[in-house]
Length: 612
Picture 1 (cartoon, rainbow, N blue to C red):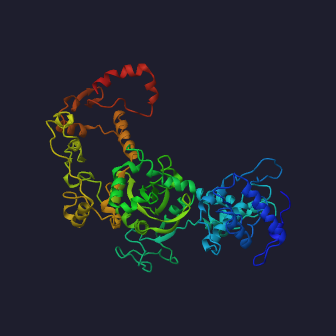
Picture 2: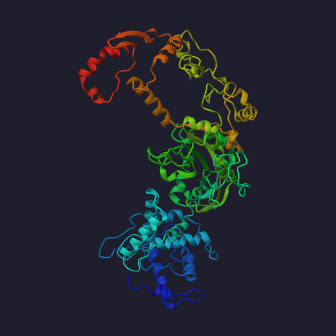
């Protein structure tokens, strides 16, 4: 690594390079193209000030780029052309500890610029950020300005620092570092450093009661059209009362194709079909979508999307109750091993609280639906790094994933009351318990079993003296469901008796939504958790949580033919007790599960187990 000032002294923009510069540049290219580990398809990484080692070219194009743009700044150690960066005071190679360069290379997979093409404004911001990634904070550290600021901003978000707190920390860090250290001085400069990532978000004012968005023609309104609530805080200078934050997904989907490895994974589903359910592409919903829209299905690069949402409390349990609803979007094209990894799940919406949005979640997701409409038409100029070509990327909603209560908010069919079943819809056989007063779906779905299934003919295994011969409810097509919604949603008098429609989901605006075979999914985790907790609480007779009580026993006697489980009276020392008791043991503060490890405990409990 001799003195390489010739790289910058022998070249200036608009002037012919010196003979020394031309000779040394040819030697550099001869050396680079002679190293087989650097050459791919007769190309190497172009070190010009425009490409900055992120775009590969053949030798002629590299020569033209270097003559026109010169070498990238501060590239005296050729780390992308066979040399290793050596730390001060160390003989071992040093790589960026946080792989910041790799991340930027993935994000910056721009197509190879032509000779006459200059960088756009977003590209210039990206290149400024790349320069900061290669620029250490000071000479005795491996941290770049970008990696340091990225970690500091992450800490600000994690610990909810104020801007003043963040800037005070920056000031202290600057005083501790040697003079001339390259680190931003305030919060504004820190954010400017990251603007090249191209991950903007849009703030959309919302009615405090979630009645409407001040969006698409309503931007200048100051009161809600529905409830008349003011848009702004009283006595404050036009501060909105509630703000929805939307993060567009188009650019993030395009970046999946900007990196060669990820671009290949996004297309792997076309070759992975095996006839077994290993990937969403093996399901009927995916395959039917390809049949209905063959132009979309022919290109494996077109993206199928899943939308997931749930509410959570972002503050501690001691704080005031606050329900925040994030909405996530994940591409389903990826292989099964990475399809649900956090780095491939995009946050699209942050629905503010403090209250549960209910069916008005449908209003708040309108920006996402609008972008899905535009993605259906396609995004031109998407660069596929695996095929080294541009293509028109399309994306489509395939299904949603949520728990059962959120299903009602998402789909428009309420999950409360006797008609809550989303499969039976209006043909539900549910009934109300006479004593428990709740809707019950016990033995309402034996009709879905095959006609020759043995359970259908068992008269007393479920409800007493009941044999099931009826056919399962017919699954409605998308067109029939939409027609039913349009007819019944306004019929509030018969709500809960003839239908359970509360609103029309905004996703029906998608022109292909009625063709989807499976529009919504209930996530397995919530079902397993809720069912497991109910069984556990009942078996251990946990107070106020057990499902086994006097009312349940009375209803059981009316519905089922199980005399041993009917309610009986027992005389106890301290009075009368109801029984038999289904619980294994009543859990109190003095008892613990450690007793189960003792065989004598199980022996003592044997009579109770047999009776229960």
